[in-house]
Figure 1 (cartoon, protein in one colour):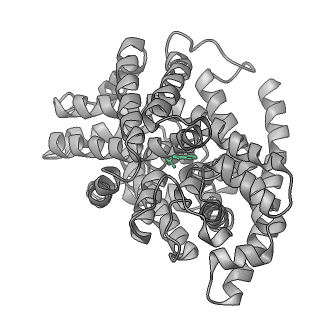
Figure 2 (cartoon, helix red, strand yellow; figure 1 turned 135 degrees about the horizontal axis):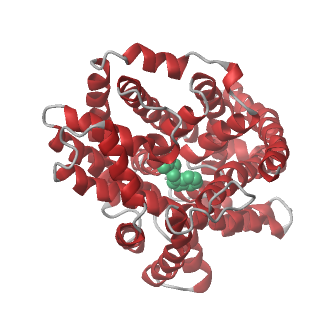
Figure 3 (cartoon, protein in one colour; figure 1 turned 90 degrees about the vertical axis):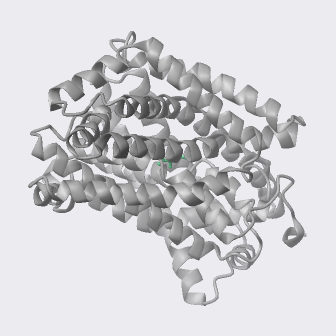
Length: 459
Ligand code: TRP
């Protein structure tokens, strides 16, 4: 009987523990590193608007669907999908949706760990006062020199992977639940401090204009795809991370309220990061569209100029590291949970195995910033670009689409109603409408653009 199913991996201690863990997964490099540079590369306002719409009409409904499926299945995404499909009399092949999610998580972590390694390095660069009083040019050169050095990147990548796998091997509940509880609020406080600094640059309004006044002539099909992909990426959707966290959610917790809380927390952090960063960019005459290095070339500049900058800067990168850490573990949790369930491995053994494989694949991204930087796929994409494009812009939206179809169309109304337990019927119907029509149509429309985008890439 479905109502009695229990997870062999344990349960969160409360609804709040779930919200914290899911926010820990959602808030990460995606918010502070990726969101600003994507917004910068795609002209600002229009990108931000499409991003916000995607979070509301695609992100929240899919998050609810993932949590719902997870809590009903109570297993790793692969086994959850297999069990739920069997329960509804559907094909066993639905388990492959879980399998694709495991693959996506593995691919994402392999490059996520490289960027997290940069964060780790910047804790020390900032802490040692390297950026005190430095010019924009010096900060930018320091970054370029850093990523050109594979040995340094390798050391930081290795440390981050070990950190991640140690936590995963111990089970998500011990330690991390506690860490997230205290670190997330401090991260927000520091972002507010940076916003305060940005207000005094004299370019605050410029920054706000860039972020919030949409100029649709600046957005391309590619930009729309990137905005929706970023909504999936930032909310950790489409690969089973939230599903597996949902499988540890206590029975009585409200899925709708929890999901909305997580989405609000995640979006607020991204927007705050943008509000802090763009005024600094404009005040220093920097170009907002400079890609992956944006945050690493702007924030050290601000810290280098403000009083107490060494302290605040170090603290900021420590917190960003924690945000990346709590995200990293959720990227491998589905794979590790599955190995434990189906291969009878201990968590430790499963973690070592997955961690080693991820570390190895990460080398591809690592070298794409230096010795392989000329080696491009389709003539335009480095290994890192291609991985990022494949995962964030194709695998996550496609995974989300299938999750929406399963939850909205294939699962019985009785099952989804019972699991979501939304008190009022209107709320349930609103969710069902979004997940049945709006979400799939939006994702399909945007994915169709990929065909056009691919033509552009190969042209
Ligand atoms: N959401 C995280 C971030 O913004 C990254 C992340 C963690 C993720 N788990 C995920 C992305 C699952 C996609 C799928 O940094």
